[in-house]
Figure (tube, rainbow, N blue to C red):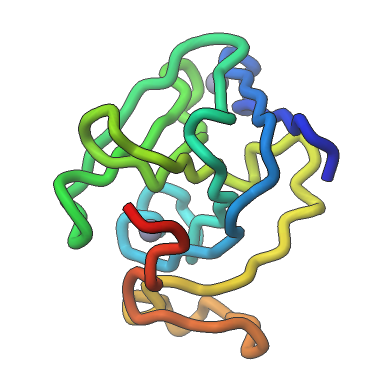
Length: 144
Ligand SMILES: [Zn+2]
Ligand SMILES: [Zn+2]
């Protein structure tokens, strides 16, 4: 992975840049991520919020209730609907942004370090037995 790394949506209306290394890479198997991604999980790269910026376009956001706090905030392209971000919460105090691995210009460097919300995973969702699994959220990587 080269720093900064870049990515965007399928139509090109949204482009972003991240100037820091990922804090964590994970797959979230929760029902919301299933419905939003159309697949078994969302593959996400957690980065410091201050290192992430849009270089083109504006995200639209959708909110779902979160067991952690408030509402989970997920960003998507208003033109093509591609999901770009997650792991943020309602309000502007989030310390991290979860960048969707599939939106990276080079998604090949994504290496999941854990599976989360495996309690909601589908039976057809094959997981790597070698990485840690959490029923819901893992212990927070950085104190929030
Ligand atoms: Zn788009
Ligand atoms: Zn999820």
